[in-house]
Length: 261
Image 1: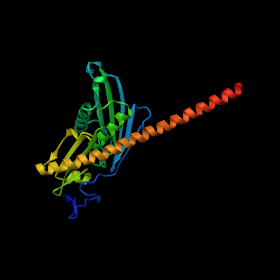
Image 2: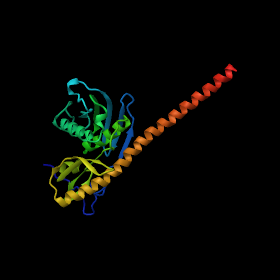
Image 3: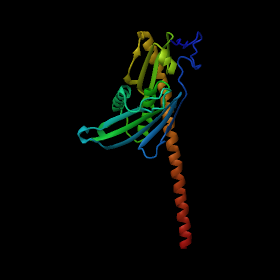
Image 4: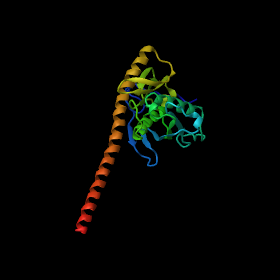
């Protein structure tokens, strides 16, 4: 039987050198898929996630359509090569559960009543997994929905906290997730600090839970800034391209006028 690694030292440093309240490195790019209505690519630690949004569009099968609002449908999938031990292709209980809770989380922030009898279809592909894939997926999906122009109350930020070696920590890594005492994934509206998804695996005291929540809310606000930056960069490029195109059109018009004269 393998020996459990020491996850945090006496100075509060974790296996990867992070402090208890520190996130793994996070980068997000919006608009990475040309044929999707909205998309995002995220790297969080060693997690690599792609999210694509299609819709709002006519709901199929039609009997699932709601007469007064849209249906948010999320399909979460882990690629067979995303983990060290090759995963069996296709849906399993875990991916079905994550798809369901992610759909419910976004149904609470999207203005569904603006799109009756339609569906907003979201596809999440985990290209590389290293713990925390459900909160990484939530974070990527929020950016992809915004990129698609889907009206929402706010972006959602996914984040998790847990307990390792008796210490409450933020954003568990792979070994921390495997050998730690608790894991609490959340979806948070950063602006209002509203919790729209909370799951828990393991045991925490009330004091530990409150400490973890404070850390998670502060981290959600950090993640929110990264999400906004990804969208700003995406549309700043679009505006620059538009201005360049307009400039080229003006030059063409001037040349045409000169030739006609």
